[in-house]
Length: 169
Image 1 (tube, one colour):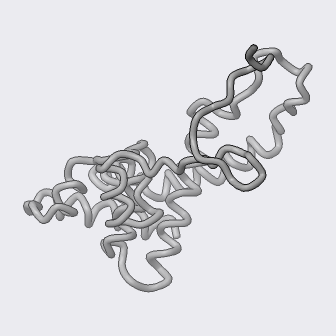
Image 2 (image 1 turned 180 degrees about the vertical axis):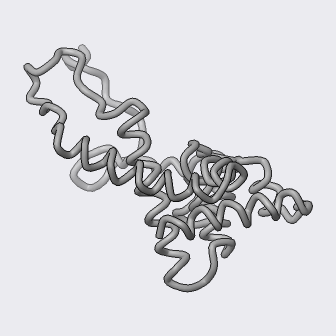
């Protein structure tokens, strides 16, 4: 006679009999990115920071922090916003704070207008590096710079993006 209930999951167990969880290290590509860029491999700005393209002083860290804050604020304002439960307010998911939304919008608009005053090429490069989500790779010009295959147009894009970041810190 067999035991009642759910069958036991296979795998190694600790001395209390609990299943030891396996750590998923990710794909080989993800492991290589983590080795190269450390914990900053999840966005284009982080990859540029980890490779030293933003500089090597506290200004580079300020560019990284401000750029990530702007990206989060942009996604909050124009993107999905807060993810809510499809069941509505019954689950305790709070309402949007209109004052916070207004403050975020004003803060973001002031910084984006400062970048926009630098010119269209600066705003385009800034958006590609900071605002748009490039999780694993991209923009193409940044990938070419990081791989050592950059041309003069790629370097000009980097200079424009850094000029935009310099305008907001």
